[in-house]
Amino acid sequence: MATLTAAMITDAAIPAEPRISPDGHQVAYVVNGSLWVDSRNLGVSGTGPRWSPDSRWLYYRDGRLQRISLETGEIQPLIDGAVDCLPLDADRVVVVTRAEPGPRDPVVWTDPLPKNTLGLLDPGTGETRPLELPGRHVIEFARCPEDDLLAVLTRVTPKQDPVHPTTELHLVDPATGEVRDLGPTELVAHAPVWWRAEDGWRVAYLATTPPGPIGGLAVFDAEHRNLSAGMSCCPTELVQAGEFPLAVFGDGLDTALYRLEHNGFRRLRLERGRLLALSASDSGEAVAVLASTAHKPRNVHTGPPDGPLRQVSDTRPELHGITWGTQERLAYRAADGLELDGLVILPPGRTREDGPFSLITVPHGGPYDRYADEFSLNWFPSGQWLAAAGHAVFLPNGRGGQGHGHEFAASIAEAVGLGEWTDVLTGIDLLVAEGVADPDRLGIGSWSHGGFVSAWAVGQTDRFKAALMGAGISDWGMLVATGEEGVLEAGLGGGPTWTGPGPYTELSPITHAAKVTTPVLIAHGELDTNVPLSQAIAFHRALRYFGVEHEFVVYPREGHRISERAHQLDLLQRMLDWFEPLLR
Image (cartoon, rainbow, N blue to C red; front, side, top):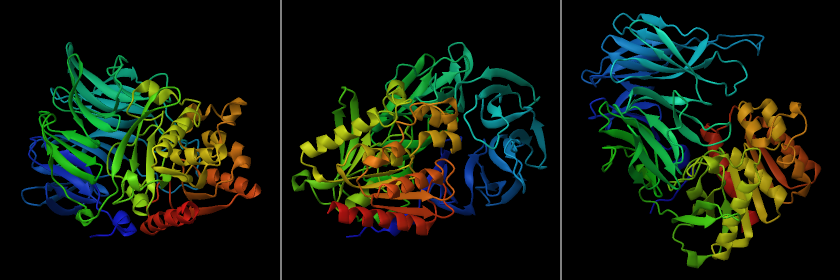
């Protein structure tokens, strides 16, 4: 029987970017930077696979845009600086390119950064003809299946301070370069598609439901109509699939696939666990997707959108002989009657009758995210890793996340740490009452927004014997002032400090540091710009001031995610070492 090790997590071969061929007969994908087609490793490194219309060439990026012939293996370098492409035919490829900024000393923050520009590449000559959108930064584009017209999403040229500006929608004719402006979109628009409505071709896209910036995603058309209004599930992806686009929806702990037809969305399938990274053939009758269930890691699957899916990849065979902790689905109600769900993972080989167990609660990040009933084994969160050490693990889906519609997601606007926190407590109380969790051996720990919830928890109760605050928020006012998602953070915590007193003070864990008695492990990336290191430093200094037992670890060169192998190994082991003596 194989034994789970930290190296199995850090060294995992992870499939990504599945892209089915236009004819629906092949699927390209990336495994740790290597390009694959079906079960064949092409022997080249790259990302962003895109098929030629005849399914004979595969375009990819590896420092420059290149293409490889699947018949001969010939590789043709094309252009530098490409960040996306879409082959229209043998002689025309729509490309998005970005100039390198070059060294700048000093850096003037109020100066614009280089913008993404749109062009039409001739692969034979290597020449690119600009498709002008003056002063605009190209985000994404989509081709009309009927006549090559491009729907292009843009924003103003990017600045040093990333924000969520209003995006705009344009129609661009690649043959003539003619541009038609359709005006502003809803907030943070992305994933444009063409859709044959009853009155002809229209453009649809994903964006945050008004008034934003906190709330669920929805599908809109160019007239600002919410095409997914009233649905209790949440769209997460939207892709071109012939005349009628396909959409992935988070639906509680599961994932649904819908087709956008003349009169709206029609559900094609409900899949247990998670589907993501969807792509479709030109006809829309074949798809490729990453799929994962409770005890099966993500792998590439293909098949019809409403029929059985066939697994193509098997990138983690080393996990086949391992006994995993049983993953159970929870359904319960919050104190105010709101329907909630989540997961509990028991230690491998154990049942509820063997409880109560020490329980580690792992709130999800986002907060607009969710736990699906999928395999939980990653550098973080890592439910099966903690379960293998003998703990039960609670993965709660409190309000503010995906999977239950817009109102559910928007309910924590300017109210973080309130309803979402009592939702977590209600789930813990349920597991205690059912004999799964030992009330004297409770821990909590997570990353990003989950790190905030952990820091918030220890200032609200002394029930936890150990906590982990990973890349977490301690001061909402300071985060709005220094974090890269300023507009979003203001919507969560209640505004920036320069507008005067606001709810951000009371909603910040730093305000409640004097009440903390739980030992806390603080872990953070040195170069994190999403949640800057200052958030961890502030909480560390507050805990030191009040004499609270804690450990503060900073990972050099790391951003919001921990990437280096040695650092991931350290974090995985450090988590176990922190919780073990305190929860034994």
